[in-house]
Image (cartoon, rainbow, N blue to C red; front, side):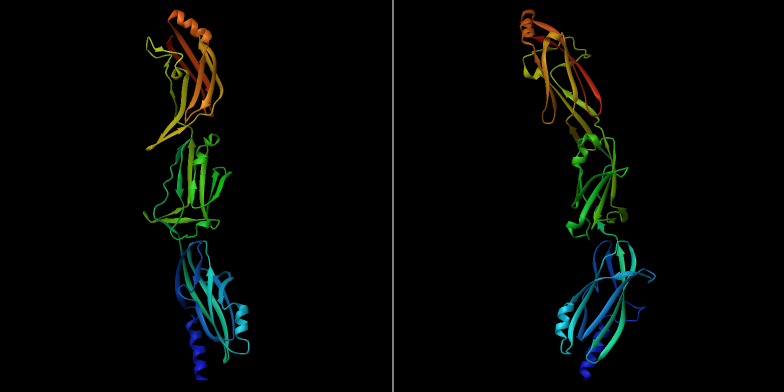
Length: 356
């Protein structure tokens, strides 16, 4: 008899059965991350016939915020009933599970009533919970401005948020229009940066964990930062061109060229920009392509195609004009190429002294 009383009373005391104003343990966790109470080992009850328990989440002043609903009990309620059938006590373990979204100091209050073969006892246990920010070894370095055709990817993973399936992010315009939503801990901006209709817009990337935005501690600086980044998409800096002709205003008095050479037939165009040490290219998307020549008899037809990554405008000389050119030896010809892109209207004038 003495042994049974000793076990029951001693083990009830050992589960954190303190006065309601005393803190049994201090548990440190991060926002939006699940933690357990107790932290190191479960509450242990031996020789019990019945257990009733409840838990509350309290604020820093010990005011109730909400009831806690998630517990792990072993054996389960059904198995426990089976084991104590016949009036014989058994051993039970209990763990509380909780998750808090805001940084700060909280308390978990456990209320417990246990009955053994020899009687019952009711007690409370209080645990202090300190919620901090998750941390990143180095915060992503996002540029304030990107150029059309650019590429960028960065990680939003923290050291404490260890479930990769819970990461996601959203990209919105500054006006709040959702542009993209995706799962994963790596934000990829390539498709957005390479879409011409996005040029001139401002965007906001928001990182989420378990569906919630979060802030983090930058370990390299010790500062707290919101996992949110803003950037602008700018039009390309310039449109480069390559061809065998010279500009109409070039001072060269003579520029000899064979019109049957393929290099003389191709005019290449490419958008280029430079961001820090990054060279960015983008193929122009054009409409309204027009090519004319002087004399007009020189040009038979023209077309365009996308190279890698240049836009190529290809001209075809008129065979009759080439025959004529063979009789005169050489002749000055000018070419005018014009088109519109998503960002501007362009016109280029070239000259050459054609020989056959």
